[in-house]
Length: 409
Image (cartoon, rainbow, N blue to C red; front, side, top):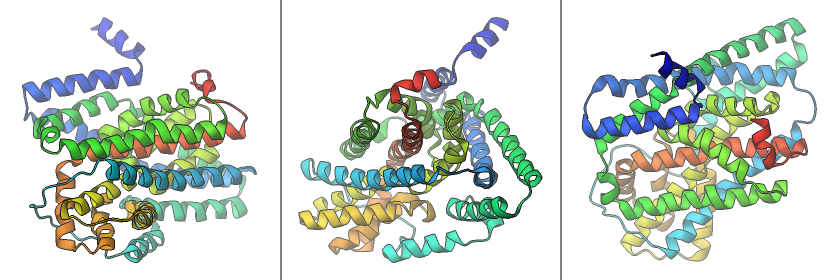
């Protein structure tokens, strides 16, 4: 037993997660249906989701209250990254869909309501923005949490005493410690999540919707492994892949299994802390990225919408496709404020081409079927992008290069 414990303590967290993954897949195939294993994943994700809103609510005001000058340029950079790469991801999805058109079987129906247009999306965001701050934390409404956290942080900075700011900072550190304790249970949580997925869905989802999944995942991998690194490499004028690999290994793996950008906020913040980035910067940019950096959502909306068009024989012109990219970029940034996530924005995009809600909602149903894979990859792309662009902006401000990653870790 001592040998096992010693091995476990010396093993890195990523290696532990991979061990949990293998065990989860094996048990899911051999002995499916064992609730006590699946509950490990439920408990892990629930704990992260429960603490993430609290973390943002206390960390952002503390960071702003203590912030000095020089953060403005980094925030402008990271917001530009978030919006520009979401638009680029939408364009990648359109290009791949044109080159390799996919059709889907429109026979299922789906329950749920989609926003009628872009105005509805922004109306939902506006309501979330000014919601009751206590309810925002209780309901994990990150748009509202960020809004009120910034307001409270500015008020603390201008009116609070040093002692009050110190108390808020201590509280944020206490919450951070709790988060780090939870993250240590990630291998067991991942094991439960993988076990649950394999037990319920097996590997059949790949065969039934293989081509559609291949298109979606291909677009997301192109964005994550080619286009995002190119942008970061040009910005830093250096090879970006040491940094990209670190973000994928440390952030994307966890996000793939938790399937929640919100749940991955603490994990991204932990990585930023290990790399000794400026906490005043990343404590705001990471939650902001989880709200508006939606590369994967833009891919999903575009690919699914064009799949419906191809199935129905609807001609999509190049100007219409470009307009679709802009629409999906704006809508994807509001995904976190729309119940049901990116899939429920498909009918809104389909309406551009005169496709009715009843038909479009059938595509939503297909999306829910493949969601066990699609949503996992989408979240991995989104969350790893949050930390990638945050680190890039911070490294650039300090004159450092991606090759410094190994030293920073």
